[in-house]
Image (cartoon, rainbow over the protein chains, first blue to last red):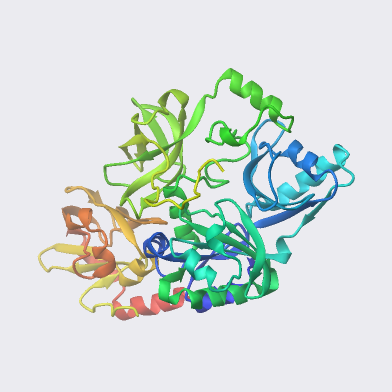
Length: 373
Length: 132
C-alpha cells in the first residue's frame, strides 16, 4: 500500500488505518460523528496527500485544456481556481477536478486519487494525437503534499503561520505564499461545506506543516479528521464523490454538473453531450432524506409504486441533521423535490423524500462565498 | 481502555454475549470489543417478537456511520422481547454494552448450546489471537 508522509503521525495519533484505493489512510482517529461535528463547530485537519496533481505547462496549454475540459476556462485569472469535468468522447465523466492557474501557461490539475493515473495517461494521449507538441504535462503527485484545513476557525489558525493576509483571499482563489517559510499554495476551498483552505507544499516538508498546524490549533479546538468524517461532511454539503456517485458512464447533466459544461466551445465529449441534452436527460442524481429509522447505503435499490426505478449512490447518517441522508439516481420524472420514493433496506421498503440540495448549508456564509465558482 | 468482560455470561466468536436467566430465557447483546470496533452506533434494527432464529443466525443489525453489521444469535430460540430503548438511543450499546445496551431476550430451545460458547477468559484469549 502507498503511504503518505504523514502515515507515522496517523499511527501515533491512534488512527484506524484503512486501504483507500491502494493508500493506507486514516478513516478515523476517535469516531466519525465527533470528528464531523468538530469540523463544523471548530476546525479539522485532513491528510489529502493521496490526491493527484498534474501540471500542464508551456505554449498552447490554454488551448489544450479548453479542448479536454468541459468548463470554459477563458477569463480565468492567475490566482483563481475552477472546478471542471474531464469528459471522454461519449461525454462520460472521467474525473471531476480543480484547475489552478499558477502562472501564464502554467496550470495545475488537482485530481481524485483513484483517477490520477488514468487522467495522466489520457492527457498524454490527447496531447500526442492532437499535436499539442509544445505542451508539457507532468505528474507532480509524488512531489506535492496536500492538507485540508476546514471549519470556521481555519483562518485564525492558519494565519499564525502564513505571512499573507488570509481574510482577503476569496473563495476558490489561491495565493502562492509561504507556510512556516516553506513555499506553498493556499487556496480557499475544500470538500466539507465549511470555510477553509487547501494547502499544497513539497511532499518532504508537509509533515512540518501538519505538526505545526495541530499545535497552532489546540486553543481553537482543531483536531485531525479521518476519511470517515470527510465523507459525511461532503455528503451533507451535497458534494459528490467520484467512483461512488459518478463514473465514466455518468454524464455531467445527470449529476448537476451541467453548470460546469460549456457547449459553446469545442471540447472532447461536446458532441455526445449536445446529443444527450437534446434527447433529454433521462435519469438524475437527487438528494433524499428519510424520516423513518434506517440508513440507505451505496447500492441499495430505489422503488416507486412497487417498481424498481433507481439506485442509491451515497448514503449515511447525517451527524448534523441526525437523520439518514443520501444521493440516488432516479428517472428524471421522479427527481422533483417532494417526490416520495421507497428504498429497500435489507428485506423491507423504507420511505424517502427527494429534497433540494445541499442537506446542510452553514448559517453564516463566508462573505465571498458563492456556489457558482 | 477496554471494559472487563463479565464472567456471568458466555461469548461467541462473532462478538455477541448471552446471559442465562435460569428460567429458560436468555438476554443477548454485543461485546465491548465489538462496540469499540463499530464506534458510533447510530441505528439498531431490532428483531420482531416471535422471530425464530437458529444459533449463529442473524437476529439484529447494528449500524455505525461507516458500517452495517449483523448480530448473530448465540442460541437457537424465539425472540420474546427486544430492547426498544435502542430505537431512540442506539448509543446505549457504546455506553453500556453489557447492561443497558442489551439487544433482545430469547426463549432457548437447546440450552446445551450454551456449553459450546466461550467463557470470559476464552473470549479474551480469542480476541487477543484475532488481533495478531
